Image (tube, rainbow, N blue to C red; front, side, top):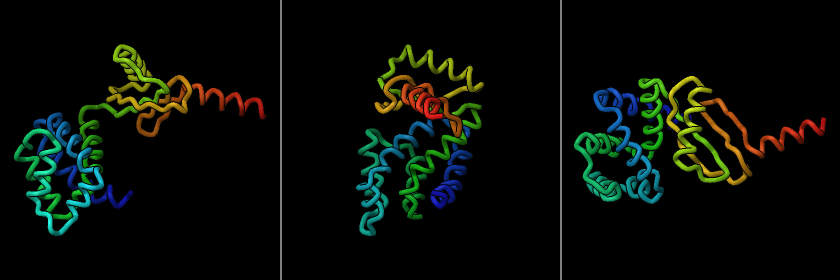
Length: 176
């Protein structure tokens, strides 16, 4: 993974500098294109020497559902020319990290045993922002192994209030 991060860093930094006037818009299209580029079949097609950059861009634009902006096409073209299309998901990850640093926020992943509705997520998000002392970009992932409660991951910090974690704590206490 370190090699991908090393390859992706200059691309993410260059894109961030080039899009400093509208980071949110760039982040939006970059996330969508990175999700498209993560498809193994598309990566295989992009790596095929018989496929031209225009053909790959056409497939990406078709999957994107709208025409790509000129700067997005230029960026993707540069990645394709340099054989770095497969690094696009890592570039998006590093770009998001740079955008978070600029805005003073962090990404937070809330793992829940059950789906969380919008009102409950807003309450959880407000409580987490107070707990971690910064603005959070919250995403939710369902994990049925938790049984109940939530587990929150913000960077390298973990807040685990799940039933599974409490049962593990009780198991350790009883075994001691």
